[in-house]
Length: 297
Image (cartoon, rainbow, N blue to C red; front, side, top):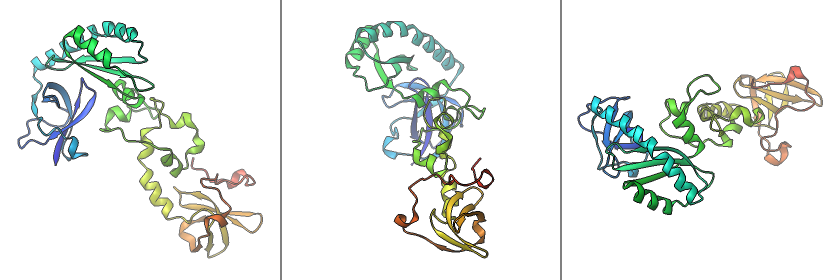
């Protein structure tokens, strides 16, 4: 199914709607659409004519109603101001129920029938009584949504360590999982958490970008601990320079040389128990001199 992706400004969520036959908008346009509750909402078009990520989550009964008009823009700005007015009484009610949550943003739906509350919390929060109280107080439908630190960074935006706008708020449509396996596959563990963490305090989104290329390059190198033969020497692989397609070979008892992958003539893959290496072992032997080190940097 082909869909259009729209980021809802009030709910801070990406929705996918069926791709219309006639398209009167383009990527980057601000539009009015019907959400999953059939309420009018304002959003930004992130992509068009793309296959659905998860077809069961597509809002099949929803549609883009129109591009935003000047009147729509004025109405949206009014709703923003109205949202600011509900923050203080909501904070008092959060304190009343003793909930460990930090209210991040409050905003009205475009049609004014619903108030969206976005909050952060370290653990799950039972806010059922709070919702009832808020609905009674404001006489509106209440929608509370908990977001994590990555989603908060996306909303707030900012500049990353690379000097550019945060990827999550610049062009990433979905927040994909970043794992330590991705860090290990690129030999970045030694960098330390401070250099691998983004503004949100979690692993950098960009750690995912080159994982497939690293995997491809690593597959063209012999495994750690294997015995390789070049036209000149035979040695045991004790270090890998994945990007430059080189390896460090232990030749004899003391000699360490650098060889290129393209010069390898034969590889004898040792059994894991015979390699004498622990998984993800540091590839630079302690006895190697500084000149011999192959570092990713």
